[in-house]
Image (cartoon, rainbow, N blue to C red; front, top):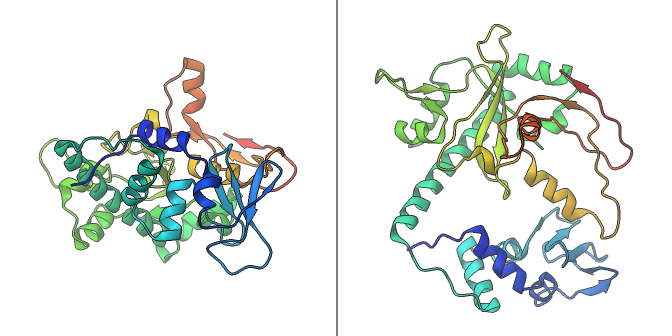
Length: 309
């Protein structure tokens, strides 16, 4: 039976183990300033480009582009599942595993199923953007200064106008309408009618958690007469607006890649401000800004900012 690990439990493990010690068991590392460097365990290279930073609790492999913590390292290097990696590290750190809660295990199983449908929906939205139906959406993105090379990075997509296009696709893949309503992808009419797609004729922005897993979506209407220009997914069992920040997983990759002691080569060079699905619990002023999100493009040097309303 599965065991659910909360963030406090995972943080306790990480606080007791240094990444350089864990990773150093399989990768020969040498100290270089505040970091450790070695040959990549994921590619065949002759010049070391694999870095481990104990202060950040991260590794970054420039040759393969992989980055993460000690849990993801074991998953990548030894092909372990998340649970297997955590159990091994818990034993090494001397941290007792939490007791199995049958109800929590069942809830986690349900959440996992919902996550799989959300990921499949994200892939479908991405594909739709590149199909004939997404022509106007592609033109809009180009017009607003977001080139095609950035679409895949932020997993941008498009939802066609059809009332049940996404629903039909996912049901054909084995989903049940009730599950899709629970993910927020479908809307169930109060009169008991058949559920229909929440996002229709919109540019889609996937919202991911800190680990990069899709938990919801935001959509920008293509029709200027649409009742809601911006539409965000509702609160669900996998998406809690106060717990997620748009772009956090991407930001973590950039922070992990930055050499220790150096200013992060990070700049917002263009931002289009829109209502954000990432809503934090903060002061009224902070909440107002937290409700806005930015389309962000990164570059390695320099910094200019331009905003549009």
